[in-house]
Image (cartoon, rainbow, N blue to C red; front, side, top):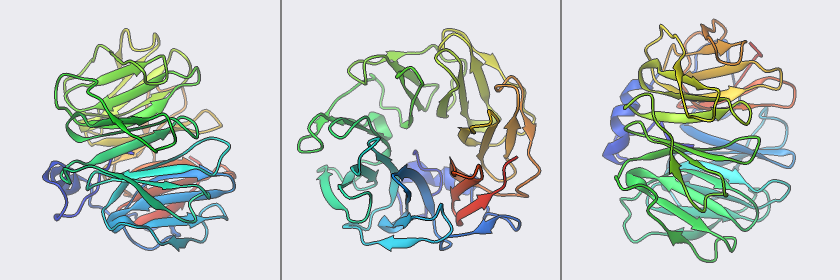
Length: 312
């Protein structure tokens, strides 16, 4: 996941975002992990693995109620984690141009790759399968592997050095990237080639949530939310009075969509994102990532750690 919370000793590109999202998870949400900066999480088998500041990696086998710390090989902040479906193989990425790998469901990790320029920052990673992985980041950073991480190839998929913030996958297998300066990208061949999606907004996007093979929801700065019913050919703005950063969006199994990010920025849609309304459940949390747990509750990750929230 792209990172939305960073301390002042981290790269300057993220500092302004930190100032916008420093609110802690509020009373009413149950804290279930140490109060530390957690930026992304993923499920693998029966476990959940989350990553965050200072190289922290936590693992839970009881749906986020209890956590155990995993000794990682680095101290750089980790911003994204992903596991190949049906396997115990996963990857985590972060600052200092760092890529970590695990072959046992997140119990142990090894450094797999590190760039020569430690100013490079990865912001998200997608494990397509146990051999194919994509990692993206700041200033157009884009790396792929087709051999499980033995070798990594750096590619330039856009002419500009814009930050690539978030990777997502649609139900038909289409890949999407959301980035700054209105950057929206699509790949129909597992990342081999990418095409630009006409953008409805020239500000930063922090994610594309595919609802089905044609319906997309793009979200970003100042409460900007857009909806497309033709795979990004055209977009319609979704009215939203909350002009705060929308960092993450999640479609629950019930069909309800939850969007969150900056403090006071919780939103819910019950009509496929044709409209959104404030969610009064969490009083004032700020989060970077949402995961649905097996019982339908929501695991929110952010600056104050992790919290389990009720279903809206």
